[in-house]
Length: 431
Ligand code: FE2
Image (cartoon, rainbow, N blue to C red; front, side, top):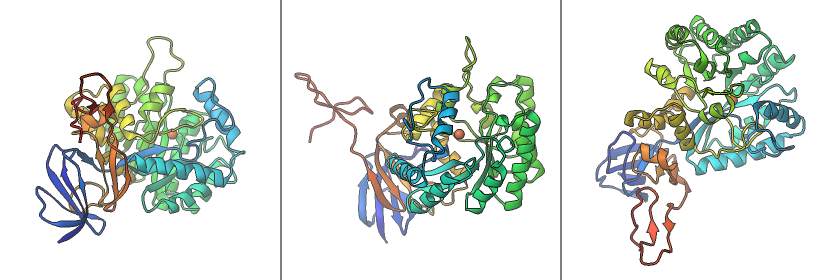
């Protein structure tokens, strides 16, 4: 058999090493040692790690790369970020949103990030963000799986036109129903919004992904409502709770009831480590709460937990760069996931786990899966996270679509090795 592409001598995230990955017709056909076959193209992995592509299951593509428009967030706080977004929304055009989103997608491809779930604000009666991102989803379909969430940023009931706009957005082809119950005027309105939005999703056969209890309020109870509505409407496996930061502050006894309810409902949990550690605990003096949800406890109870990125260079967050290894690095630290097994799991939290949330078909490195993968300048998952490793090659459907040269440092010290590999700190033979 002749292959379109063979990646030789790869290490896989599960610890297997020295494998060749043969691809044909856009799919992985063989994963074995010493694959005796010819290919249109060969990539020498040289023992480096090949991972399935990165997946970012929580992002805001309608706001990304808008940093500085119309002005900077001087204080760096959530409140000024929200005010800034309110200033920017009426100013921006469909073309501008689409142009920024496409630029971001290019950045994502360079980082091996080939699947993104983006919330899109529907509290703009012109639905400019929806129009732009539906168009972008079509334009990037060859290289990024882009899923859109109708997100009533200003509150389903707090914003008078939010529900009508959300329904229009779904009619325009937005994939997932979003929400923000903790932002409604009362706890009762929040619970009612969860109920209404889950009913809309059930009626249309859609998935749900809500910003749920992104607060430090230990008495916020919208996660419970989300688990209940999921179970009541038979939406198990199709509903995700994003952020869930109130769970950090909740009473342990209550959590011992809540997590089994979430597990029973088959909820997916999506913490966003860089944003949560930056924005939560702002009303605290010391000790200051971290605000990240209970990652280990949710995972150990059988929930699917995926790390999201949330923001890159927008009104809320000036940093970030489509680097899901950076997100895993932050999640590992803030969640104190420092055992060898836990560190390896952090790579799954930005690859296979978010793929499950999105329901991606053909995802993975087994024969039969899509021939999508990333060659990293690292030998294993822990090293990949430690280094936020260089993406040596990004492959989609059996074709190399992005390459970055290996990172090496060239020293000019007299009588000493001249080149250093940042992964091993070993001298590199000049050649
Ligand atoms: Fe978000």
